[in-house]
Length: 120
Image (cartoon, rainbow, N blue to C red; front, top):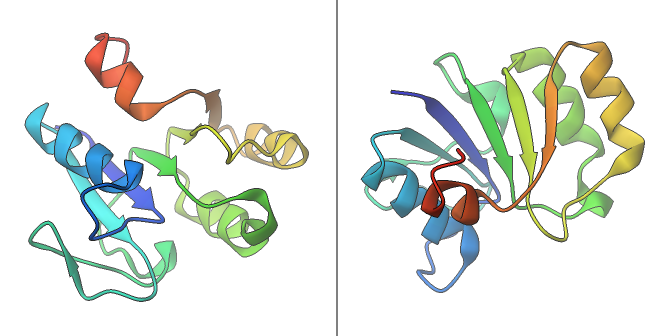
C-alpha cells in the first residue's frame, strides 16, 4: 500500500482532489489529505501542511495551482517522497529542477486517469 499526500484535498465530492482520495482508497492506497481549512475529509484526519504528516509519504499528488506552491515545493523536498504528480492546472516547470535535484520524480498527469488506466 502506497501512502499518498493529497495536497489541496477537499470535502466536496465534486472536486477532483476528493475524487482522487476516494479512488486512491478504492485502489488500495492510503491517501492523506493536506488542506489548511478542514479537520476531516472522507473520514481521514486532515493535516494543514505536508510538514505535519507523521508518516513517510511515497507520492504527493498536487491540487494547488503554481501561485500557491512555493512553500509547498519546499515542504515536498523536505518530505522526500518518491514522486510528485502535478495534476492538470498545477503544472509548475520552474519547480521541476528543484524536485529532480532532490531525487524526486516529477510527473505531469491526472491522478484519476493514471488510476483508471492502471498506469498509477
